[in-house]
Image (cartoon, rainbow, N blue to C red):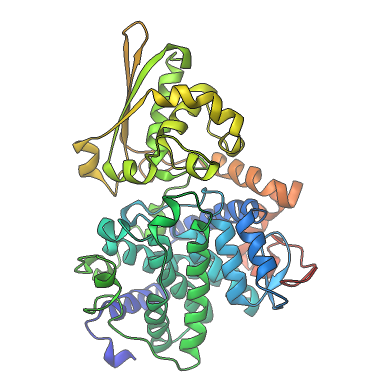
Length: 456
């Protein structure tokens, strides 16, 4: 395929991937890949007990295979990628690439790990594949942009291409196979916004499906199946089909510094990332002395996409509460924290209803101009006595501009993984830390291989 990709976006992405492969992996990129892996393992182990992942285990039938599933069991690599990718997005705690409106880790690491586990890849190979997958996927996501995100979930679309890149890198695929894999993954890309703008449980499947598509695409390409070289930019390609008027400048650009993996947001709260700056601002007001009883009105100013995606005024379910700025702002003010347990609680929701009614939402041109690379908000509280208190957060916590300390990421891992692996969290962290020093993927004790997919 190499001769037919000259000048195409697929060709440019493949060239960038080959350049990454040929160069020593920067220490900072390896650090970031290791951090991404730690974060992914925590949220995936935690999410492996959720309904979507467990339903997949039950419904996919009596299939068996060699790749491990987070939390226990095995499956063929494409199905392991599907289940693990779905689990990774279940808690709404997986990482974000803001310029692309994209959750890269859930699909990309799931695909890379599924293939690496089967072929007993080295730890270095896995980390390198993660770096490559993030680079390719984040570039595609950025070029698809907000117009694409209006109707499509970029994690399911760009995620398919990034997952294919990561899986291909694990296998050391040659240039032709690599390019065909990206093209095939593009045609399997999917994920509709409507799925998470309603009371539905399908959103995590977007990440799982993308991981599955990436692994299948690589298998097809390695077996000789060809893809369309202009699958992204063609007149009927992914961009045109999904409403993205892109010139694909990011995909075509030379490698820059830092790599995409060094520019991700690590989620601090188990809810939609568009709500984070608002939560941060409310917590800041609370720290200044504001209480729920003081509030007559909370005026929230942020960017319009946050209001479109997470502006549910009267959420009825836990799924909707994760996408409700009024509910989450009220929860942050009342509790001083936003936890999964509180979001799940119907009783807590009832207690917060009156406070949430006091929240007013508006789009602000300053935050609009900075979006999508920067995600900010301003919250002004008007008290019952007429006093006004304001907190402005230009960059949400966890973002590259306002990163979480490593100790907080580590604690997040220990908290989310504990339900599945108990006290073995520190041991798994140490195993991840040894990947660059000769460790192998099979050394990662993130699952107890006790049964195969579909077995009782």
